[in-house]
Image (cartoon, rainbow, N blue to C red; front, side, top):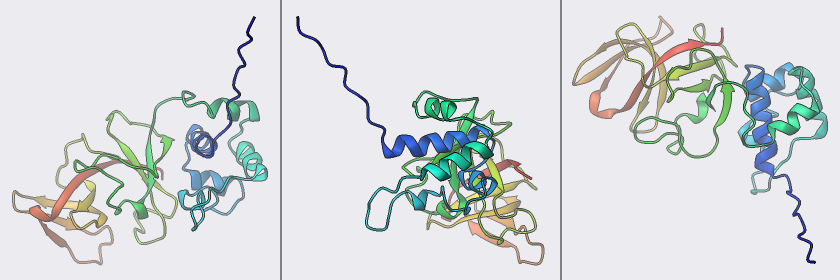
Length: 217
């Protein structure tokens, strides 16, 4: 009788980091938000920290995982289940840092998330199946949005005058503004900082524009 050996499945770098993303999503936080709540450096769980500059995989420490579990009021048993690709907990949407939104590989030509670098987060009002979230970094969008705020962007929601929107230009620039006027030829935008001048973009220079429907404030 030949015994069939059951191969052991080795945990991968991507699985562990995906589980941390899911853990943050369960708590309604971004990965950096979870790190902050855990008392860690806010960049501890950032995408940029997961691979070294020379391409080597960087794994989270057991201490950082333990602190993240405590901050999320979770357990190692739950974390083990989150390692499974199918372990979800409610509706989540793709999450990316706003600073990375200008990268050419972050979105497809229609403005939908694509490529690597995306995490996930559980957010309310995500009725649009194509919705995604962006995490604000720095204070350039003050006073409307603070460092660490998360905005929910809905490509499927109609955009109207007065809405706050995310605009991506064909040159790769990503910006947040209030839509003042939209015509077949141009997009007129008002900065979230009332002291700043309005900006007009030619319609041909705009890759896509999508409405902000929620913010974690």
